[in-house]
Image (cartoon, one colour):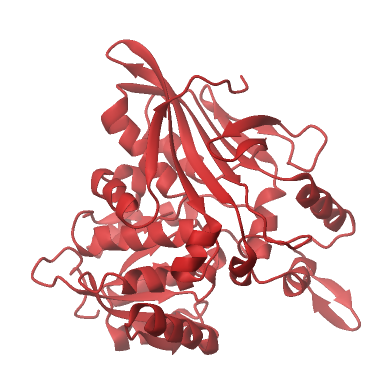
Length: 419
């Protein structure tokens, strides 16, 4: 076990050593935003399977922030290799922004080396398009027994949306009956078809059977590409009406578990017709398949071949315009009276690129990961075991959102939602 074990929150050590794993678009944002807080993050390491990506981000961090960060090559699927790196570097915390397939391997390495853990997306098996928290929740006793803290899903959704829910429960409501999470990307990147984060993960997510929670059970509805998909037009702040589709998203699973009395929770995401048309064609011709097929004597996975052809999400920022609007609509009671509120953030693609050379999707994921890491190393969030962030106090996190580029608003809601 490294000497760093258990030091998260130790006020005698105010500047933390951290390791970021993953050098994609989100890793770029996390590295730069952490570097903007040298009073909190005294030493930053960035590791990935592709060292050149780490070095390119490190060069930009030096140029943008004037801060030197260290880099390393590591295969995050190889627990022994990752553990050796953690033992050599001795970080207090790992920020995992690698692929969701790698979550359990990285958690295993953290347990071996006595390092605290934070991620932005829950685990899913590589060979099955299915994601849920059960695999990571099963680590509860192992992290608790080691005196370590693991924080799951600290991006925007999941992440900030969970914090919004915790804030509403603490400050706005005595009882929350329904939650509708609405995620709108009203931006334009100029490409005929592209995904805003890893294409393989994105397409697996949006082509699944949809579930939402109602009256004590999960209710299934058709995927967004099917004729029976559930959708409606919602008038988003600053960007106007957008068609919003019912989708399954992982934060619903943890919120149902941690919010007593929740009658219904749904997740909605906007999709433009060109995106849906492209995706339907790709699905029809088999390009979204996740199983191996034989091609010219070699085995390939079609969705990974498609990923190689599509624009790198990290490259979209330079031409991206428009905004994202992500938030939660709550319906419940306060002081015996019904109350409906809308708590949301608006983020601008161009402004995100100006600050950290990233589009807003990566920005809205990377900033909360940095804030969550800040909460852990400063001891604002303390605990032993595995936590979803609605279990933790939201107040300082909400304050840091306002200070770090993701300001939020809360307003009374008098609009309409589907029943």
